[in-house]
Figure 1 (cartoon, helix red, strand yellow):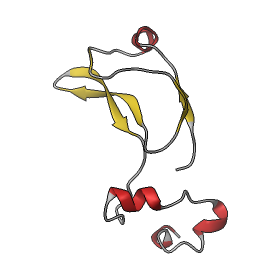
Figure 2: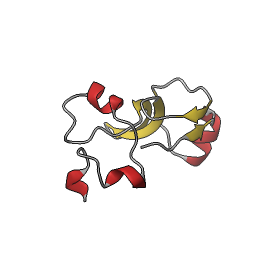
Figure 3: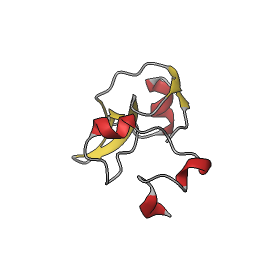
Length: 90
């Protein structure tokens, strides 16, 4: 996962677009969000929509631990075919 995105909405703007009942996250602008960083997300918990932060990224089933996954560079079209870690996806 090598894509990046912008996360700059304030709480008032988010509440205008999404039903948020409870906030458990500190929002701060990030104009270059990368995998492994913490991002806000709305989850359903105990019948409420809760704004919390989560680590953005993917830990595939074959990774033994988080450190191993963080050490793997993102795949590109040119490297997928020869990658041992992506052999099951071919």
